[in-house]
Image 1 (cartoon, rainbow, N blue to C red):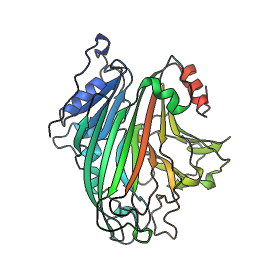
Image 2 (image 1 turned 180 degrees about the vertical axis):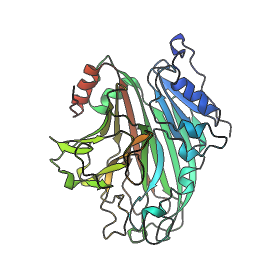
Image 3 (image 1 turned 120 degrees about the vertical axis):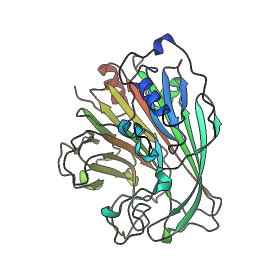
Image 4 (image 1 turned 90 degrees about the vertical axis):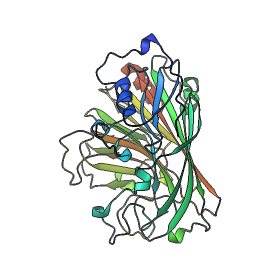
Length: 385
């Protein structure tokens, strides 16, 4: 299908002068695949969507085309003759859970469940979405999937993925906090509707399906992920992966979780669903960038976790997670890559035709430190100097 590209605004302020920025990245991607660009705020706020690459939001900017590319892009992959869509990066994509347990989709039905058998299913990572609606600020896409979990249960599902650029005037109400006037912003929401399109009801005993939203961002030495907690938790109350035993990497103090996001050392945490926070965020001092993620919360109780094992209670799960990329052997990488901010939907026993939904909102703010610090404080995060 030929995508109907929006008529771009031509503003003198959008002329590019930097060597690598949103404009140059857009040209790089356009050499490999067709893009949909959404924009508002007089063209200052923009995002790039690649339907052929799982409908990913690949990049955003809050300073027109001359601004920095905010999402993490695998530019090496994008220079290859044949590009694998699942390897290009991007700041919003959809996968499906469970990640861990006997109901996982990621271990190829090879016993025992072990990290050596980890593989993202090709249907998650290398499929194009069909565009069915489009405007300057919104796109709706569709795809059908046939999934099989570790124990062999099959799921026929129909998925609708919508991405909408949020209006700057509405950001205060979304965050329930007044945004300082000096900050630039770009924000968008991905919404998903998953339908059981098969002939049988999904049952807990044989596995369920959840929606998993993930965003990739450049790791730096001065980037920290934050989670303002509702409860007085310790590290033993949350899910920890890859043996994080360094408080410089992961810590909790005064109901605020901090996690180092340098894109060098493989590490990950998850917040159990019963302790669901309002948001997860990151601050990059060197990029002068505050990123906030909100997500859909419900009264459901069935969630998944990422533990690589057969589990007695596979529905004792997490609702927000953050992953810092690095080598599998947990040595430090020679080349810096990315970290992720993620949210998970609950899972339900769906009869044929029943639906599960999930939304994931991403907000980026840039400006003077005093304004970023003030906004962070208003959403429960205390930044240092």
